[in-house]
Each structure stands twice: as C-alpha cells, then as structure tokens.
Length: 218
Image (cartoon, rainbow, N blue to C red; front, top):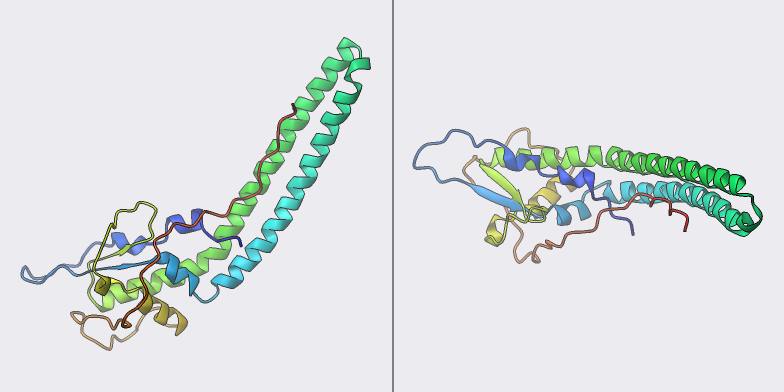
C-alpha cells in the first residue's frame, strides 16, 4: 500500500522548535516526545487521503507507461530498419529519437511534480490538525519542547516512556479537539497517559515514489 510520506512528512514536527517560555529558575524544563508514525496511523482522514493518493498515483503511472511505450516503439522501429537506412537518414532518425527522449523525460518529470504536489495538497489539512493538537498540548502542560521519535534525523535515541504523549495526541485528534480552549489542568500538571501502551514504532517508512522516469534507448 502506498504510504503518504516524503515531502509532506519532512516538516511534520514544527512545534519541536518552539522557543520555551520564560520560567522561574527553580522550575524544571519539561520535555516530551511523540511518534509521528503511530499518530498518523490513527489520525482521522489519513486513510482516506492515502487511498485517494494511491488511486491518483496509479493514473499518473498509467500516463508514464503510455509515454514509455511510445518511446520504446520508436526505438524498436529504428533498430529494425537502421540497416537499410542511408547514413544521412540514419543520423536524422537518431536525432529524432534523442529529441523524443528529451520530450518524454520532461513529460515524466512534470507528472512526478504533479504527483508530489498532489500528495502535499492531500496531507496539508491533516498535518495542520496534528500540529495544532500537539501545540495545544505543549501549551496546556507547559512543555518546553516536544520531540519526534520517528524523525528522520534520529536525534532521539532513547527516552522514558512516561514522556511519550503519542496516545494523548491521538485521543485529542479522534475527539475532534484541535486544541483545548480552556485547559482542564494547570500548566504544571502531567498529561494522562494510558497504562502499558505498546512500544513506539520508530521504523521509518519508505516515501511514496512518484512515477519513474523513462529509460534511454540501448
């Protein structure tokens, strides 16, 4: 199944770089972390966006296949008839094939760009909701920073599971609360966490690949 990752996920955790608010000297620095992979798997609307992108990506790939087939057919025809062509005619056909290859590669690149833009378009509202919930939790519980255990940078090596607020983020998303308007607890309180939640999956998922480029003639 195609996974919506790549450019849309690269900027997932913007809140991790939020400047910490001023605090008293004796107040400890509060930190937490999430697993964006786990959160996205349970984010409302993600499955529908993924299904839509998978369907549209198949359409892009079909267009690439048509372009590739046309170019392959032209190359095959040249290879079949090149022995009976005059040197001038052969040179002209080779130039025509080179130009056709260049046009085909440009068209394939345009399709790849369209696929990438469409992925970002589908994911943008989902990422905005996720980031809004995370920022709301950060402000509500007075966290200085929230890290992503699934980030490609791999900066977070290990951490206390008590600091994992992934399930709280998922609960807020599924409840439809983008951010708490009136915090029910004081900022110094700790967020409620489910007991014995499974270990966070920090495995990176391969990005969805847009249509592949055309092959050059042999």
